[in-house]
Structures are given as C-alpha cells and as structure tokens.
Amino acid sequence: DSSRENVYDRFPLSAKGKVRDAVWNLSKNSAGITIRFSTNSSAVAVKWKLLNGNTMLHMAATGIKGIDLYGKTENRWQYINTGFPKSMENEQVLVENMPVEWREYQLYLPLYDGVINVEVGIDSLCEIKKPEKTSCKPIVFYGTSITQGGCASRPGMAYSNIISRKLGVECMNFGFSGNGKMEKEVVDLISEIDAAFFVIDCVPNMQAAEIRERVIP
Image (tube, rainbow, N blue to C red; front, side, top):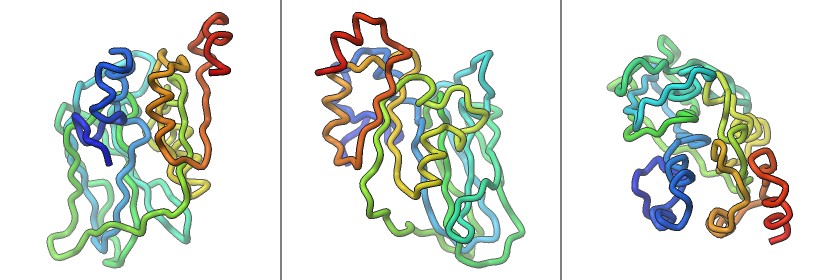
C-alpha cells in the first residue's frame, strides 16, 4: 500500500537511498509480482511495456521479460501460455475460442526486467473483476539470483511462484541477483510485512566474514 516510484517496483519509494544502488535497481525488476483477475471472456490478451529491455546470454528472454498466464481449473492453477517479448512494447493474445464463462487467471510478470505498464484485453461485451483476496498471511523470501528467478525459462517457474500456486498462499519475492547479503537495510524493510514466516536464503552471495557478522543480527 506504500508509495512507489513505479507501481510494479518491489520496494517502496522510501527505500531509495537507504538500500545500496545495486539492490534498489534490482528491486525494479518485477520478479514474483502477479496480477490476479476473473473474467468471462472467451479470449485473454496482454499488452506490456518493459522498463529496460534486458538481455542475458545464459537466460531465456521469456524468463527475463516475458509474461505467463495461468488459469484456475478445479481449484488448481494450470499453465496456459507465455507472452513472448519481441520489443520494448509487446502485445499478444494468450488464449481464445473458449466458452463464455467465469474463470480466474493469474499473470506472472518478468523476472529480470521491470514493467512500466500492463494491460489485459478481453472481449468487448464481457467483464473483468478482482477475485476474492486470500485471507492467509504471505510467505516472504529474501535471497539471491535463484530466489529472483534465475534462470527459469518463464516467469511462472520461479520457485517462489511454484510454491505460491501449490500452497495457495501469496509469496513475496525479494531475491536480488548477486546482492542477497542479509543487509540490515533490506531486513528492516521486509520485517514490516505481516508475514506467516520469512525464508532467508542469502548464503550463496556472502563471504564467511559477512555470515559471521550478519546472521545473528
């Protein structure tokens, strides 16, 4: 609910200047952020505008800056399709020709890039609405590139997103590639969240001296 520089940032604006620049820049990647909605449309399209247009030699573009669509069937989430990033601004029909009936969907946003804008397209005579909010407290993850989603082939396959689908619990992703270092400034921010529990998986980014210094605090 806090003010953000960009609505799809993972950190509030108040964190700018408090966390290291590398962590702040990575917090603008939309890893773990999802958009849940219900619609009775026979087709679902998505339009998204990227923040940076990042590329990496060791990770698929669909994971870096694509979008995944999942649908709920018999109370379980089923993969439907991936929006393929072809430029800074992308638009794609993800599913069509379905019966006109209400279904719940979830869009998974890019793991290693940010988004400036996301739009969902439906049939002109159909409706879209918010689904029921989950009542249980979230699980909060703080970690490294693996937590952020490296090197998943598409956004829905980051491990925090898999856990979220299987347990039916919101998972908040604070994975920072190469920069998960148990830093007090980050912990102060995430500890404000009323979470079910916290998963701290920073050791692969830390040296022995940092571990001795920071684990207990």
